[in-house]
Length: 141
Length: 138
Image (cartoon, rainbow over all chains, first blue to last red):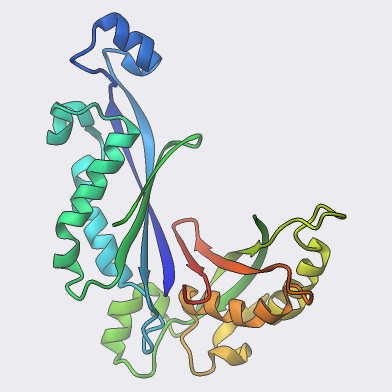
């Protein structure tokens, strides 16, 4: 078993604002991230998969298939978008790094077995960088 | 407790399997299948697990770990064409997966002669976008 990690990037806008909270509470909790005009980040997404190494190819994962999956499920729908306005999940959820990580995890898991019907590789972990200093991680199972 | 050391080497490789057709090689490896080879600056992170020695406060002597990495990995890999110049890859495609496993096998028995500390994982970064971690099959 080896663990292969692949990193992708996209840029997007968001605003952190919970509808159930008052404006003052939102400002207190989210600070400058509550700016009504929104703001953006260069997000980085790292996908880690686990699988044995194929004896013929020396590969643990079909990287072309993984890249195509990431492009279709993450990069194309999120790149250069306003997450609050243009991504259905964030019409109700606040697009924090935590919720964005869960949303990306959901998107990948929904189509994972369709892309990798044998169940190999296994989706092990997702990490999202909102900035260099702000990173969220979700592990599989 | 786990302590990690990072070293680098630069090398070229060709990702092609003689068991696959040209078209299959192109599909599986993409541009990395170029038969004329291409290269990377690889970063290797070696993680060692153990408890600090009560006298030295160290899990292991990092100078000795550096020597092991230099003697057993860097002197073999650095500025080489892996397919032709590293015996492990004579019949094995030098993908980043196989490089991580090969490095593990080269250094596992040399980490700590006293057996107090042991190799926990080998991470090999081939680019900023791709790395592999091997934990001895775990």
